[in-house]
Length: 382
Image (tube, rainbow, N blue to C red):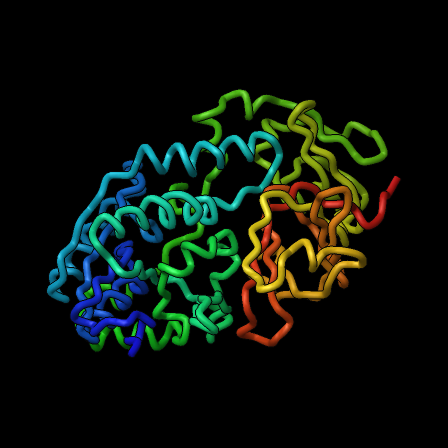
């Protein structure tokens, strides 16, 4: 007989490592599992400690948040360990993030963190501790169906974090558990209050946790001073409109703060890291229907090669974490994977993710995804 985590043991005989960031979500996960009688071990990874970042609102995995995780573990009566992973986090997340921006991409560091530190290193720690599962506070669902664990969007669509988990492998998914997938954030905070946790009203962490005040360009400039070299702002038609102080200060789709005057609204449509030029143009130049993907991770039942053969297959995709999935077709060409968006999208940038979903409503299955290597413009405006 399986317990609530789909493991054939009594809860008290089932060890679960909980990734505790010091926030509300992971704290409630630890509380729920402890309340059910599981052998809970809390683990917090210290990922960075950038001075002012350690005590600011919205930070995670540093300073005050580690103290919060300790206090929660003490309140719940579960053991808690803090592991120093600062160098690993820098090598696996911060450095690739800075390198990608320097090359004109828009990386998603939360995905890189899940791919490396959280779901590889922390999972290894959990195994070393003799755990049967690793639980996190992500808002996604996983279910055991026909002997295979599948990943689904959460009940609360406004908290959906499946976009950041598309690279989870099947082996990792089999070991991971996401107890909050069936709850809303309101319900989670209510549980935190019920458990007497001091962090019940704590602010959520921001997406780029290691960037103080959201100034990612400052982080990149410290690591790559050459990335803030001056260059030209050029219209798609070839006109030089002005100059800039580094392409890392611009993102695809940006309209405000371009520093040039024009009769029509202009947007950043391309970043050329080799020439140091920022290419601008009209809004329509940002429209994309087709993207080419790299590093595709597939979680579906059918082999990806069978799905993409011929004319491809219909599914839903997200190219923005905050957008609802939209209809698309996935297909292969010359050994590469392409996705055509039925309605199109504006401002897609290399480095972002394209996540696949089964077309089955709001809590549809997550089928995997890939990183965008190229966004093909729908129209070339002279």
